[in-house]
Length: 339
Image (cartoon, rainbow, N blue to C red; front, side):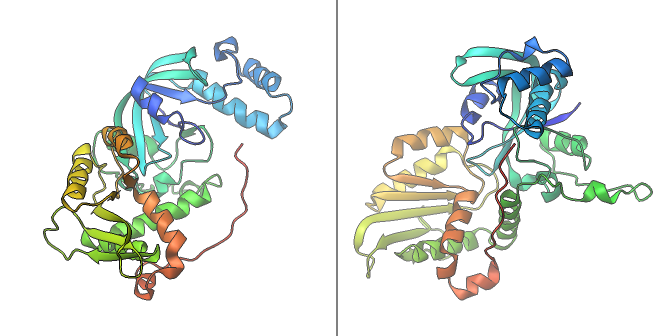
């Protein structure tokens, strides 16, 4: 059994249809049916023909991905799909061979899969395992006892971590990959710090500080029963201008279900609020995301990545005591184009 990372499109555009249709989807829609090339030489030639202007290195990268997806990946292998719009990883088992399809828009290359755990919070993976997800579409993940660890998570158990053999420890085995996406690595480190230091009511306190930095005047509910709302907010010098905002914050690592969304909608009616913000650290399941579209003009959903983005956007305006609890530093890094 092998472990494969297969992304759901560069922007996550294939993720919904992949989960709904039980498919792993490859991009490269310019490529013809990959079954036409059953050998490595034939596949490389097919890539060169499809992308005549591509450099030798780019051809090699494309070849490795499409050949692996079509021919190296086997029934029974595990697929991990990091979700672009959620702090989650979807896990599946491959159930069918490569297929070429023409009825799914830009999606051409697929494998049938069974999504066993489609909403695994990133927090269930230890950081070194997350570091193995490179910024490409398809990649085999082999290092750091990945097979045993993914199998454990697939079965709902904790990530057992990596314990190198003292007699055969190889420093290269535990070094971070050069292909790690630096931005995602930094985001994962910030996420882990917030999970450890801002639990339950403290996470709502952090959200309250972010809203104040955004220009809201807020009423923050103290610990204890909150009547379905953690924060009431409104703009203006006295908090009397613009729409009334109800905010509910959930710190659970598990994806929130639609019940939490419906509760917020009911609370908005009780407080006569025109707008709502639901902050769920572990993200949302597919049912909640679908129902949220019906309330697009009145409710916004934030997951961990959305909150971290808001923190980064307003960090200089946050209280100094929060700076000591959440010490961040802005850095600049060269953007390397994805191959």
